[in-house]
Amino acid sequence: MKFGPIIRIVEVYFAAVVLTVLGYALLMPAGNFEYDITLLRILIVMTAAARSLWLIERRASTARQFIVGSMIVVIVLSVLDMVFGGEYERIAQVVSMPVLVAGGVLYFGGSLFIIGYFAFSQRAKALFVEPLDKSTQPTHDPGEDIYPKPLTWPWFRNLVIYYCSFSIFGHWAEIGFCWLIVLGVVMGDYDFSHAQLWDWWLCPYPAEGLAVVLIVVLLFPVKEWLLKKFGGRVAPTLVVSFLVTMFVCAGIDFTTGITANANYELWDYRGLPFNFMGQVLLQNTLVYSAAATFILWVVYPLMAKALHRAPQSVVNGVFFGLVGFYAFLEVLYYVHIGPNGLVFG
Image (cartoon, rainbow, N blue to C red; front, side):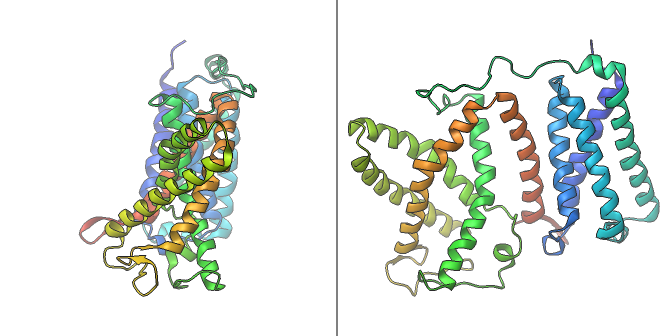
């Protein structure tokens, strides 16, 4: 049974929702965006729309329940945001009243129609019946190879999941490291007025996400190779892999510094001992290497095993939802419209 015009219109609606959310992020100055019910609603809208598009194209049997449930949550959060969150006033300051009314009718009317169609339409019940990836049910083989074959879809998909997740986790790790400086545990400077670090908790730090991708792509195969060379002995493998990790961490730190911190506006180590060009500091390299080693030996194997053992339909769903979530954050914090057009950074 082919998709009819209603399903295609629903797909266009969800695509329009994704583009609208990205447009909202483009127009909204990051400094004016608060961590409130508006943020929760927008992130749920973006994630749900991205995942709904994927489920529809797969004719997934879970599409109807997911779309109905997520749309109900979105409507409830939208009403709460309009009544208590002040979103109505914020939107009214940006667009005219006719546009505001038309957008509200389209937003709520479209949402209610989609809920009714997917909940009660016999055609929708007949269309969305396909089980997702029955051939890839969870595995529990203790000797399984958790590292996907390079250049395959699971390999790329998992790398994107790691990148998006650790771009945000890495930001929180930076906050923790700065608190070590505040407490005097390690040397360095800190600036509580740096809003991107201290106030914008979900602002992704791409360098941290890229670092984890490099750990997976470069360091994990090296670690496995060293483990074989040392006959499975952990101690010598751990020492050598730590030294390799130090070299890679220092290289990433230095490359990031000369590209994103050329004028030392983000950090400046020139007044501290054991620095190189003010961009790399030995104590930081040791801390980063210890964290990278922990990720390499503990965190990544656990995450890779979880992604490998989970049904691929679940992992794919996480991928599409996470990409939508991350795209909104990237646009919100790193792209905006200025007097001279688009401004990046």
